[in-house]
Length: 312
Image 1 (cartoon, rainbow, N blue to C red):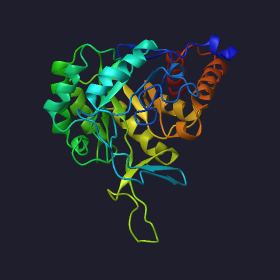
Image 2: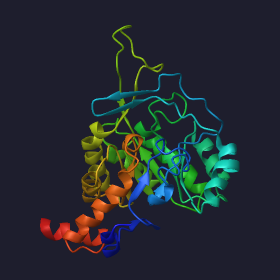
Image 3: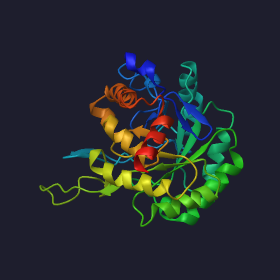
Image 4: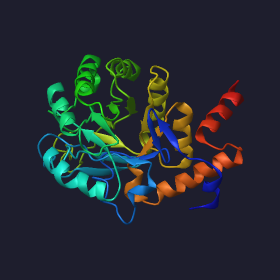
């Protein structure tokens, strides 16, 4: 650990949770939590968010599923996963044996199905659950919930009714007119945090065929291209709710993470950048520590107070 890490406290508060640092591995970019080990051990993060789990196993969408863009990536994975039973019986115990409790990302086709999954996790070692209400790459699992505040409120309320042992975070889509309105609906239903944002809707064309290479035509755009959009969304959500905001979208440096925190985020998820740069989390933490130390801030809370004083 770099020496300057010892001079500052990089701990992050996300509601009732206290994390060792503000970085989380984003859902869909870190497998079930141990897939990068030992190249990138999960302990470097404050927490990891598992790939999204559905009630039954899913094979996902046909290939091709991934495509690089000049400033990011298009993906159309389609929520491939082992299903809830196998996840509870094999993946969670493997994490528990390592001393880890993940944030579990869930997707289902109805409020009742979401609630049933949450009940199954009531006795499982989970740090929190993240409701994926906004995957753009599937038809029947949460693709449009995040565009409907009433649906967001109904699902959140149903899950909160049956899952009381850990925080419930709601992951929202940028593909709406006012993400603040949707965030308020989640907060009204008892959400403990808002995750913003999921991927933007994107597309490519194969000039050999004149058609999209993706089976579902459109795909989710992630990476540096969406960082400014995510930053604006986090700022909007943070101004509209009182619960914590967990930022997601294109962060690829300590500066990006600091900007998310300045916009109101309590923690920041790293995603697409991990595929090409597994050393990123350690460098970001070093960069955060250096930024705080250079301003005589002993913690992230002290940095927020520093910014307030500078802005007044």
